[in-house]
Image 1 (cartoon, rainbow, N blue to C red):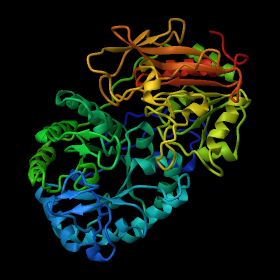
Image 2 (image 1 turned 120 degrees about the vertical axis):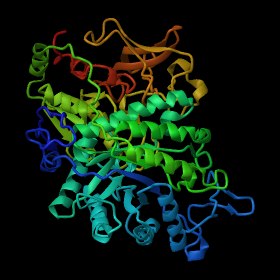
Image 3 (image 1 turned 135 degrees about the vertical axis):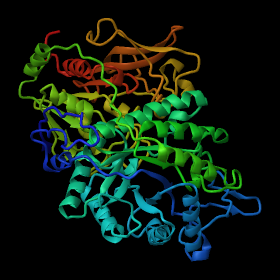
Image 4 (image 1 turned 90 degrees about the vertical axis):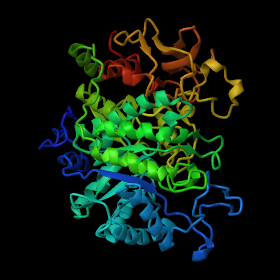
Length: 619
């Protein structure tokens, strides 16, 4: 178990400041080493494109890979949204790679971020060819680490990173900043290690004089704390079903958040643009976002230029499965190459700004109330699981003693409610479900609840405990006493769930939605909060248990429309009186709600409500 207590972490270091923010006291060595880094300096302005070297044909003796059934006469490929103008090609073909590099330079692209799946993989075999041709064509090459070989094991990530640095890092074509190779980490891999574990791997590389510039697929506070830069791979979930006028402010908010967070800690800010998207050939039902004749792409580029970001990332040059490619196709010809060239040039000319993060809502809770609640806690501590991000930092700034617990810690070092009455989860949608035997992580959480503990879930993505470490949907929140609903409860058809209890992917058109607080609950928080009109619009409500069941339920915030229609609860408290979780309490606050609240007030109420009655502070 990694136990530590933090003090306030300043986050006002603008790009170019000479010192890093003050270090937290008692921070583990790896996190302390990451926090002690100064700002990243002398970052060249770049336009980079995500590149997929995973395509194979029988020409090179390894058979078809990633194309599916190819019908050249009909210009159709079973697993490709569009058809390459040059036909199906092989990523190990030097002539094809040379053509790609030539087209990329023609489009004003400075380099590629190549998908990489580990030593010895087909994609790994393509990297030497790509480096050679990129160097000859004046392009830089980075790699996109797609997975951790052994989720939960930082040593396995370290081994892969060490391999990349030793085998490719010295190549003159490999993209570098400050003399260090730049390596991007995809969201899947990000979620397969805890932030402290990533810090451990990256710090070890530094100690071995094999340090890298690691760019996170994310833009949270802990991403900026541990990594050297921030980005997101695919923003289309925010665009789906929206008209162009709504997409511009979404880009503005997303890019401002990425740049602001990066600037606050002196990290590299990279914003992503995508010409369109259609994965309906490989996923059902899938997502399709129309290119709008290039206008979708143009809007994003314009906001990228206004954002002041260091790098613009294009998703993608040749991800044919998802229809996001700018590589010439039978459907679009070279249109998107030419459009990219004009828009990339405008980005290169735009100034790099220093954007401050938007101010947080002011808190109402007083120092005396916080001190009283700390006194109620006494020597007891709060266990942080899933992610040690901004909310966890707020906890310790309020003076609460915390322990950062990995998923393995829950299994291998069980903690008791007598010492840790609260487990606090502020992570994303993925978690490590199994350490030694199937489901033992959730069994450990269930045991903590059954012993009288509390689970507080205030997630940084809409659907906590939805994916396991491999990315497979498991939807296990309900097993942890947290009945969250998407379009249907797990295992139940959507039509069997009342519409007012279902989630949605974006707010219904024509409805103005408001979160309304239960009058006698959490009085420090506002009575009404509007549903956010920007950012991640997905809604995942808390579903009240059936009356007379194993839990009593208290709604805290409910989402309603101006017409009086109910869309479920955004926050609530379940207290289990019978069944396998008897004695436990679970609190949930939806992502759509909590960022609009004062963190200190929210945390105060959550802890006070989560403590067992015999420990709870007076109202």
